[in-house]
Image (cartoon, rainbow, N blue to C red; front, side, top):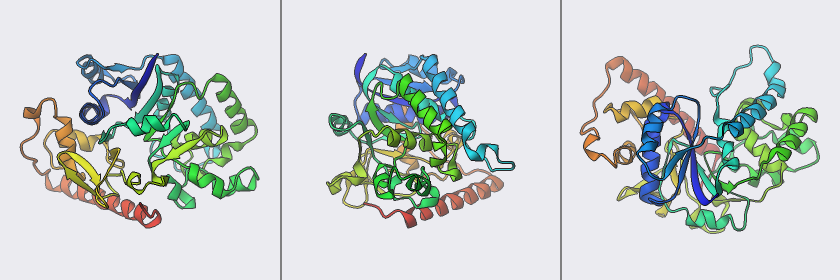
Length: 346
């Protein structure tokens, strides 16, 4: 077993983002910290080639663990009331494999940090790992500020159970794109207990029906029901630790390739390019001028090892494609404004 390490979840589709993340970890966290890539699926030819070229990056190969998490998640979702409804709109990740990230709890690292692959690491993890001496989980997100319709858990249903109040639940809501924890928290016995609560006692209804097929929703239930201790940097008493992290919702200042929160120049743990597809990053990496915030920051890290391969100029797509991209960007901007409207930051 190894003391500390980093996990991410990837396949060939997110190759460009994975390379950017690995290079940012090497530059801003440590060139020596071990990184383990959990396979999203079996499309891993480019990923494996990249890992073979890196001394400290490996592929997670405990398929028994992956299959256990897949089976658990699918059994839970099948028991949700919305699963049996006709004509229900499925979330865009319906039937996906994001729950495989939980295999990190069965891995080799005693303490670990997980990054979604659509992220860039921006600072050391020393304070994060230190927090694990006091807490079971460490997060850095603003999920606890979301309004009722879009929280991971159904606050009203849980309050009606008499087990938790909204005041109890709010500070425990969290994301799953960046978190730190420890190996072994969700063993086979714990998973069986949670399965009985979710399925036999119908606590699956605690999961928000508007977004019921989400690994983050299940993750929130798991940490709440197991009563694990949580620390969230956005709830820290130290204002210097409360920052943003979303590329499409927060403003950052670039200082020598490192991003800082625009309010107070506070260092951020990572930038998360949520709501941008892997196709966007593939096109950007090929030299197309895709509208992505902080696109040059991404390109700097994507091509950090081979700067001569970085596109010297970015070309615009054809008119029809450009109009489609603008429409998509307008939709993303509206979502970001909605996010800011309901979540007061810092």
